Length: 139
Image 1 (tube, rainbow, N blue to C red):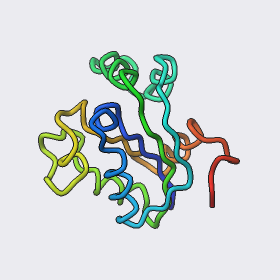
Image 2 (tube, rainbow, N blue to C red):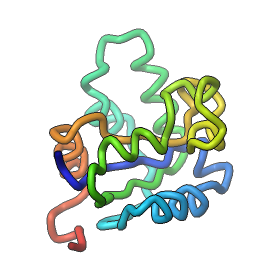
Image 3 (cartoon, rainbow, N blue to C red):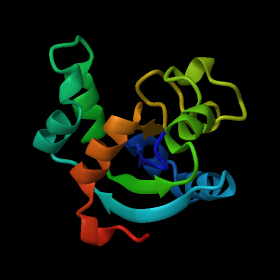
């Protein structure tokens, strides 16, 4: 079990002005922010990041959505980071997410669900390395 994970505040939540609220919620949940940046993904970056979904019927739509506006990526640390973030985010489909979860509060659909979180310790390491050089991460 790792104590690091990666999150992306997606274009819908950034456009809605929810970035600060979401980051404050994550800190209130005991996460420390090791790295933080705002960027606008290129189609090539989005395809590379979500390559695990290449060939699935929603892949092109996901890439289009993730490149539709700025995102905020954060490397996070806390005990049991991956699972705790997934619990706080709620189910992928925001319409089925409990009201006290980030997706329940800020998402509107299965695609426009406000936030991404790593789904395993192995992916957390890969995803963090995708966005952050080691020198960019604070202990």
